[in-house]
Length: 112
Length: 111
Image (cartoon, rainbow over all chains, first blue to last red; front, side):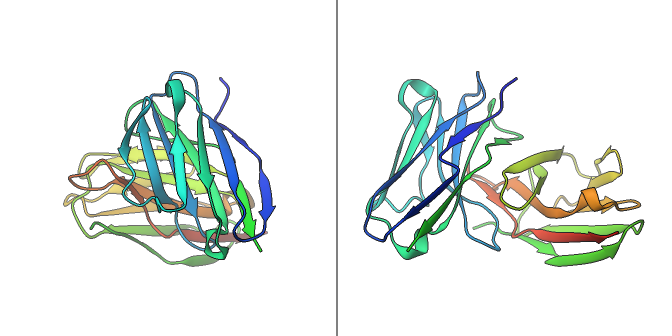
């Protein structure tokens, strides 16, 4: 069974530029999560999808971050414009419903 | 809002030693998950605990959820270098659909 795929693995951009991350969850997993993990901290949930509907996006900075999950499968997370404090690892995870989550390898974003 | 606090923040042990990591919640836990993360990689699911007093083991790792369901411990017996990494507890935040994580415990095992 293929795991959660994410791309790119690494991205370096300048502040005020835009960036997009892609995630393909495990086949059949209805729930998809995007997390932001700043160095030395635990992951912080940005947005949670159930199929293609948003369950929770209360911690998503909506003035600059957006996410979509078209057709209830893969998802993209966009930052526009990026700030220095957005430097972090962005993790995507999926689960059948609730319960244990399966994580992708993450995308390490550096904003200079 | 519910928070998960882990202790210790970091741990260095000699190979072969036992160790324990704790995760304490500010509210009742309805599902507690343990994950392991290696530097630069995603999280790997280890175990899930739901019932008070529940204990689960996988290889040399044992996790327990206390009766009051506000604290969990992760115990590693006879640690090996392969156990090194960051251990994170995660939980379904009480009364919400939100999933929260602790700050993590960084484990280093000296050969």
